[in-house]
Structures are given as C-alpha cells and as structure tokens.
Length: 89
Image (cartoon, rainbow, N blue to C red; front, top):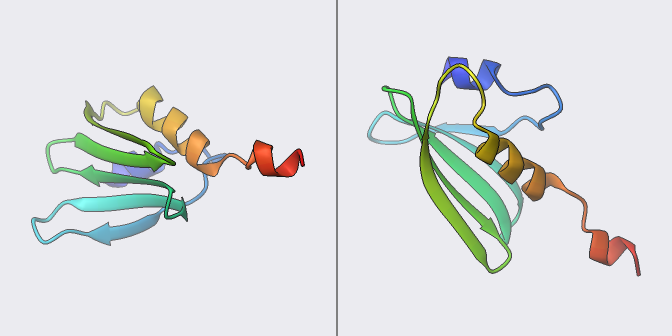
C-alpha cells in the first residue's frame, strides 16, 4: 500500500485511506455519490477497483508493478474532472 501511495503522481488529489476487515488497505476518491473510485490493495500487490461515473460502473483488477496503472490514472482523472456541462451553461 505504501508503494502504491508513493507512486501517485503529485497532480492526483490525495485519496481517503482506510483498512478493511480482511487486512487490505482501501483508497478512495470521492467527488459525489455518482462519481467515486475505490481501490483495495491486497498484500500481494493486486489492485481491485470499482468506479461509479454517473450510470457507468467500471470494475477490475490490476497488478501493481511500481507504477500507477494507466486505467486507474484515467479513472481518477474522470472522477476529479470539472463538470464541463454545468460550467458551459
């Protein structure tokens, strides 16, 4: 979990961090009930993630190899992006 957190680019907002009953560490980026990403980090380096982006639900597993997986970087960016639709009105 420490390696994952230190691999986060400085441009990514700091996530909330928690512990699960099974010993995994969870990090979460939360913007609203419809825009959230949760990543559970297992002791062997598996990153189990689930994102909610409006009606779209995305989940999967990546293996952490010293770098942030691109799919997670992309999801974090989508969670954190400004609402372009509401700002254009």
